[in-house]
Length: 43
Image (cartoon, rainbow, N blue to C red; front, side, top):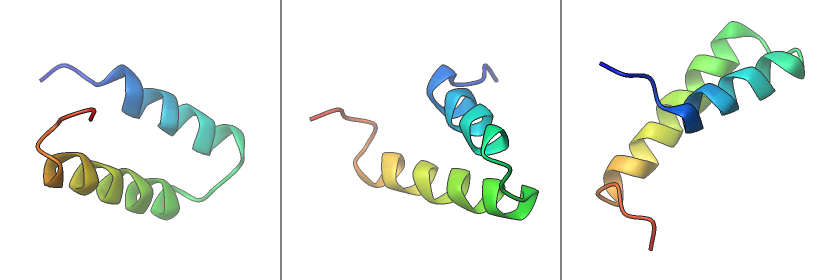
């Protein structure tokens, strides 16, 4: 599966800010849930 440029950007920003790996995983998880809840629509 191809990696999302959006999520990769968030990952790099989280790492840049020095957040823990656990925090990164939690943030990515909830962002994915939010995206899928809205059925991958932008509007």
